[in-house]
Image (cartoon, rainbow, N blue to C red; front, top):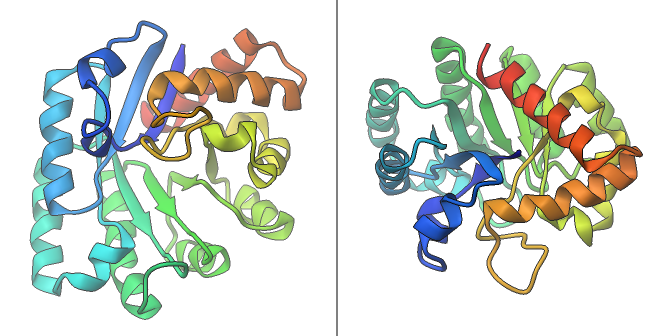
Length: 243
């Protein structure tokens, strides 16, 4: 019963056969995240083809700084009409994207959109963890899922205090930062993701079925059986996406 709440099937289809990837029986839910107008459109097309694929629609930080207000507002209108299960991927990036103030302006628009639609918001915060948490709190963000969060213990504790969820990627199998994150997160706030085709635990592009690698490592960290952990993650998925 594998749950992937953050993947990019529109990118993965360039690397692998989607029919084969999606139809693996052990994968129950795949939430494919859009990163801009073209990506969002393709995510919606894929979601219409497969029942287990759910669309999350958003605007990656690089698009936030390259598009005009008019273009972003038009995309928000389209997202409203599309009934996504989440807003994502959105957020702040101080690693590869410039103009953090513009990124913040756009993120606020998507925080407000997620609140208006009453759906989760899946948040990117690379090298901008503190600024991201501050902006989310100041704007009273609800149903927050921190994607690949790499903040220190203090920032992780702050996000836990704010009642946010966290997705642990498959690279937890070999990445010390994500192993620490998995250890710190309360069980009732833990979700799994791939960020496919990225962050693979194997020598090939990542895919939803590889979450089984994450489950094995996280179960070891949390001192649970794999079956117990899968059930907990499924309940967490239901708690934030289906209520």
